[in-house]
Amino acid sequence: MHVRTRWARAPPARRSRAARRERGATMTSRPTRRQDVVRVLWRWTSDTPDAVPRVRTALRCALEQLGYGAEALDDAVLAVSELATNALVHAPGPYEVRLRFTAARLTCEVADTDPHLPTVPVFPAAAPYGPAPECRGGGLNALSAVLSDRGRGLHIVHYLTCGAWGFATERGGRTKVAWMAIPGS
Image 1 (cartoon, helix red, strand yellow):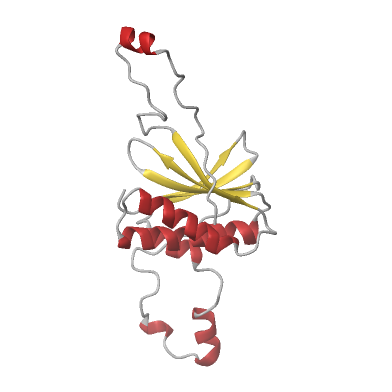
Image 2 (cartoon, rainbow, N blue to C red):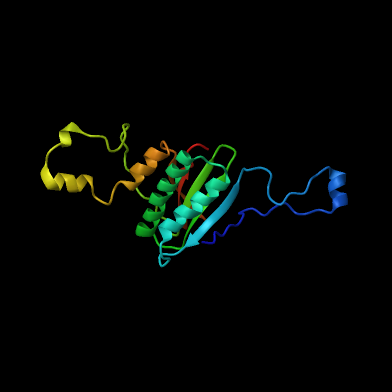
């Protein structure tokens, strides 16, 4: 798989060696400050086969290159999988996954072209799927409700990121971004 990247902000302009010596500057190929740097990891459409596994692979490769450990890596990959799946199911493409480097933390973003921000559910203070004595029994219907394929993604993201996630609009309200802080950053 080829991972395409681009810097959202152009690298500093190159100066002649004499001009750098005069100003005491050094030439770099990319910004030296991590603030405001956005790196696009991968773009896809609703027709792209195996899009979510490819998103996971792109994020895993990028975080491995940045030196993240196994636990933070696994949590981030699972959480971005949920955000990418939500984008594919609920919003029109094209889509992109990116990393945003700020002074405070590293953030992963999944962007789509739906400008509407979803309603965020209220999350319990406890772990989302612990046993609840009042929910015991109920037969097959109760079990099916607990094990349903839908409705758990944002709870998982909330739990894995310790609540450091959300939605925002970009480009004058024309696009939406689901973002999450990378655990351990």
